[in-house]
Length: 387
Image: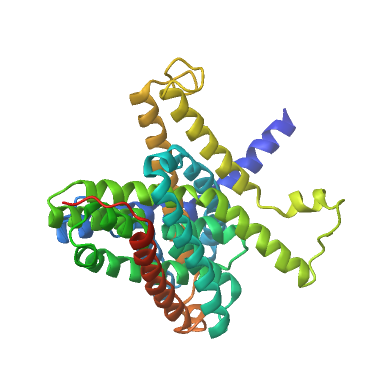
């Protein structure tokens, strides 16, 4: 009995130690969700805000953490949010991804998406090397440009052991160019593709970073074309890009491990190194991929393809399954917002100033180059569909 009381006391002490910092990050996350909706919908007039709540959370955290001297007793909770809550949110984020989105886009659209992803990763890496940017920061800007903006950055950061200030800076870079693209690209797409909603939607879905930004730009383009296919194609194209997170994040993790090994990390390179590999491999990535598989299996069940009688995993009908995975992904987004609020609170402007303007030059170059690659690939491969 005394041992049980001791364990309960220790557990209560641990909770009390992390609760203040965690509560502050959660409060900032809630305020960021509200601010994102207010400015994106009420002020700018979008049906879905192009301003990411994660971005607002980082900015609020940076302002508060640098303008005020935060007490030391907040540190344990903020550390828990950055390390544990972030990984949990990334794992749950996997339920957003279904391989069936690949089939929805078709044989023409998927190669265009792949070309744009590879181009973004390659060009961001080359620009980063040319400007002498830290390799991890260049990788974060590359995955943010190529996959899905903020979500890809926060999912890749722990996998490559990126520092908090590198994650914060990469999010800022991607957000700046993503918002600019949301406002400008619908008109560029309409002009280049002569009002063709299919090709224009492919362009928006491959050239704009964040999912919410693609949705906002797709709605603007649909208004220009008087055709909702522009929005539909842009949204599906973006979903397909998101699916490739399940491949790109493990790839980046393995690439980082190999670079660390060459730099002197103790990782065996022979056939007997499997234990070392799995010891170093970020296990949350496996959880992310596993939940993406669960989403795909559930979707297959709803479609009557997995032997579950038209029910997802044998439990939910189509409506129930949609509500279930929507609820999980909503929580995933909120947990990521909590974690990034903690990142902002823990980051100092002095650390960001040390990175200089070079990351923005890399982000600008990568975004511009990927836009050109997207236009070229669509003109060569994209199917047409006039307004």
